[in-house]
Image 1 (tube, rainbow, N blue to C red):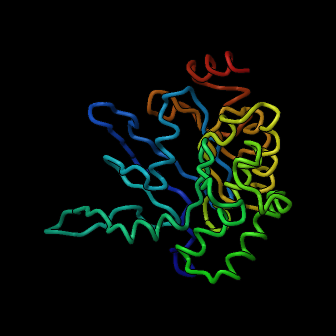
Image 2 (cartoon, rainbow, N blue to C red):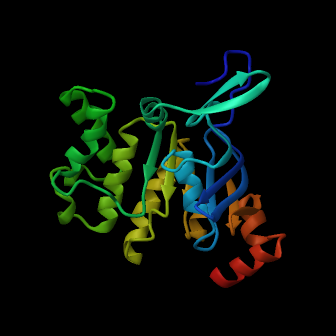
Image 3 (cartoon, one colour):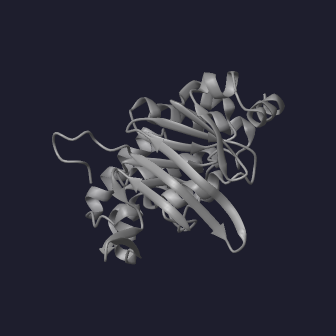
Length: 265
């Protein structure tokens, strides 16, 4: 829900002092992040740095332990109540969380397609079940999104008949079919054979060029250089450095960042 006319629109994503614990394991340690509308934010860092946990929290697949998280100005997963001069937080009901989540597209490392459904049926499913579109409207929307990712000719194929890159493109079409305001990508190419990575990154480049707001967790430094408006380098649950790709990748200021890119480049 955007600000009223006359007020500047809020950022698409605002992460304020977010912590996440899994038992005694402190995975996110006070993360602050702002992603503006239409911006591509690429999150880089070593395995185990908290990157995937961060975007799973944005999508409310994980509940944050402390802090606040806003999408388009709306507090995610929580409701604030003023009680005797202090703010009390309440978890939202599942239906309200689902409503919030329906505005966010998520693409996973593993494609998570339904194996018993064709590509077309996979993309139609959420618009029918969540948005209650008619079968005709859902099919048209699904065909439009499959065309957008270059998969029109595979609409009748089952996941087992598709390459990994093709499955991931169907997964992107499935997320786009919900008409999201924000797209989250959790290492979308890391399960792919190297020769298939390019076709998925190509679709993501087109999305970025169309103005879609995107947060991308990836190891693809070349993609970050080419597409990112903002690069965030995370390590050990904190944001070590942020800036443009040229600042963070080519001219890092922090020793930990220099060490990381010295090894991966």
